[in-house]
Length: 174
Image (cartoon, rainbow, N blue to C red; front, side):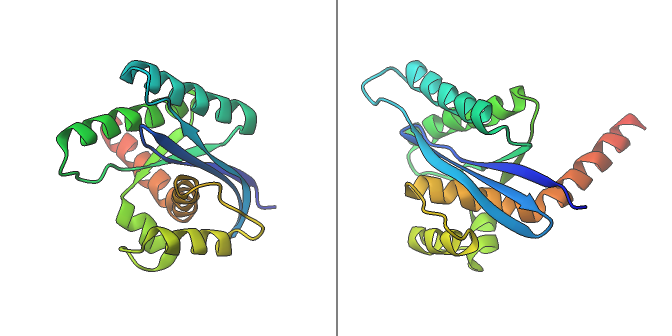
């Protein structure tokens, strides 16, 4: 009997952090839920990071995923924006790790190529393919669609990531 695992994809952002949950049973993917954790731009950076943290903790408590994946940062021309994104990414990595989940990271181009077949796909292509791959799924935002794409990518690569991590741990013990 094939077991089902629930995967959480997180698309980090300071203004809006997308999240998406899928259940994976063998090669079958099923949409569970998706949404966006928003922070209040009128608040301090620290308060906004707490809002993201609290939103992600609530999602973990409600849906109990077995594994998580986060999009890696892309290079920005604006150093201040890149720093803020990095801080939001830190929260997106920390919350599931603190909950005891394995957390994988995937580059934007790998996610796009996995879901659409093109590493340079646009937001509309990603949304369309996510909703095609997950029947009856309606994404609540482009951030949520991206998060579901991250979860789909994780569904495809998680066993390879797990194998590499186990091998690295064995080597470090030797």
